[in-house]
Image 1 (cartoon, rainbow, N blue to C red):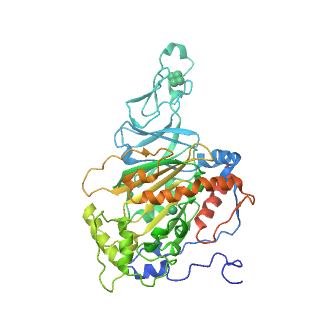
Image 2: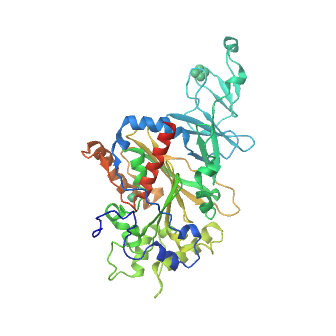
Image 3: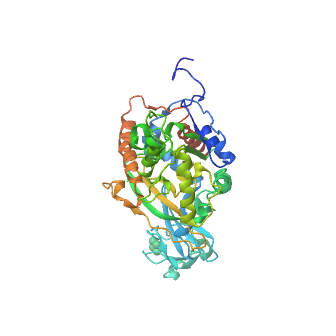
Length: 462
Ligand code: FES
Ligand SMILES: [Fe+2]
């Protein structure tokens, strides 16, 4: 094996300097085991075929073999609090009516009239029944047939056989999932071990406070993968390096469906020369990006001899307690500061930790070349208050930047930097002479992990 970058080392190399392990040891609280463990798994160093992102044939294989067999995040509970509330969830060639039932349960019906196939609803909302706007075939919100106009002409249709077809529904943490195909793993099996980790962060106590979306001219995987490693920060987001341990990120993978990047904040990037950089400077730069819990005018003075990280965590611990009426005394510094960007295969990305949580979702829109990217921000409901209804989705026009969504604050500028790459990723993948995509063994393991899982689905259900 030669110097840096020459020779196979089975993914053992790491960015030199203080890393995630050191931050865990320095935390003012005792971190739970899953934050300390190293769950990296070397999966080889083979390149990926660029055609996975660009070929209509590959996309068709995903539609046939992958999407019907995965659990998809379809809605949040607080989008449909009342009986008769409906979310129209559309993806990968299907359309569902995710519907709250009178008994509080949730069912998902295929949103297609069984007469001549019109979609029953185009928008989410409330309904006493599902009445087709074409000829008036009508279903109850439990999917049973209610009425066929001119019933005499349809003597050949048995009412009992005319219930709307249904998808599986699973619920966890305030999230509602659908799965088209029958059987397969339960939602709990599919998500493991994510619900164990999120037990501390309780997304079931959160609500969608902000929701912004935009169609991105790139493949859905390429778009999702732009959020799977922190490493691109050094070139794409240089302005966050003063407070981001980009290359000190811990990458963990679990089973087939879950992985996470734990990216520390309130520390200097290893790409920045620490000479002359004070702890106060780190905090000041972090506060330009809100410091996770700061308001616009928050000033934080770091006492002598205290690290930016320890002090900012203490500030956030107090502010979260104030904002939510919930006790945060046992919360680790990491959970109050850092980016815990989880992904659930194939297209769902909920952030862990105690901050207002970002939640991503990526859907092909409608083919291999375009993606609807959604960003939600979940806020913790104040203890003892009724759960607010979800904010509705604001969809940016194709020519609107993310900064036009002022509600997402400083995140807008960061997303615009990410999106500035993506159209040229898609174009480049199509123009590629090598036809190959190379991945870092460690920092890009989450991308490799998801492609490996995708291949398993294509093989199993192909
Ligand atoms: S297509 Fe729906 S009632 Fe005719
Ligand atoms: Fe980014």
